[in-house]
Amino acid sequence: GLECQAAMLAAERRTEADLLAMESEVMDMEKVMRLGGDVGEASVKFHTAFIAASHNAMLLRINEMLMELLRFSRSRSLQKPERYEDVLRDHRLILEKIRQQDAIGAAQALREHLEKAKHVVLATEPQHGA
Image (cartoon, rainbow, N blue to C red; front, side, top):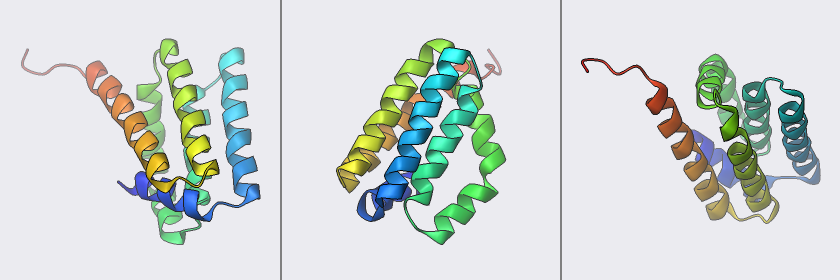
């Protein structure tokens, strides 16, 4: 999807400033987890940071347009605190692949991260017709 494309571009185009911004968001997520804050918002900020690192104006614009939907989706996937460590681990892996300029690895790590989130969201959906 679009985020996987952004992760690939980020791996190819990221600057040192981009890496610092992504690292900062990962550290903020750790802090938010310890303090019991809004982990969903911290996740949104990390995703926005790597999309910014793609240096693709169209992907940034699409991200802005979809921001409320993305916030809702991430808040749903992060309803259970036991998921926080897993998400943090995924974010670290995505960041590491981008740092290594491994475009394929970054996209794969993100795809797996999004698949896990999708399964969590679908598992929390009310079952219709059951």
